[in-house]
Picture: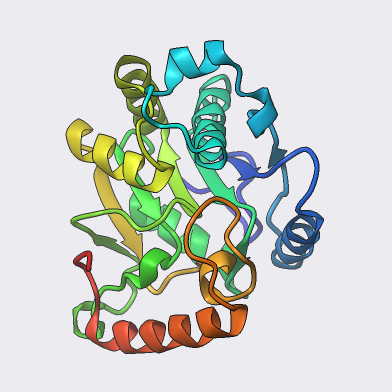
Length: 248
């Protein structure tokens, strides 16, 4: 259960931000400022940069056909965070990517969601953001409820998992290896493992490489930031009303 108080529950949550050792200084400055304003601890995870991914690591954890260097690196960073989390005795692991924006009331609403979630032995993941602009339609929202069952994942920019989830994912990776981008890999393995998927509504995080704040660092067609911002906001506000739960 969440600790008493109003601040971020550091005594319960292992928090890491996927980042790199060198470069992307604008993202580092953004994360430090954004998290400090919200009262969220900042600890960057910088292992498994592209140059650190040796042939031995690839052979151990990555499928032969998955070759995109940046995508492989990011996927390994997520796996590395799960492994480090399991070396602690904390019940929850909160993972961010380095382009995320947080809601002004992030901590208060995060604590509310954690209280609603209940037991840390629950085999479930909470997606805090609005990745791909997926939303529960407005007419399904209930006052006082933050967590809603979902049929599929959002993106991997901001999510919370428990120890049972981290254990199951790490075991799955060791047996099956990483074969696609981490967002899709998580969804595939969680479906196979019977991991419960929950969406935080309304979201308390947003991905900067989707909302026009940053260019993507791993893949995708590079549109202008203005185009991305306008397109994102159009989808965002229409889907907040009508919902969007199926891939298109």
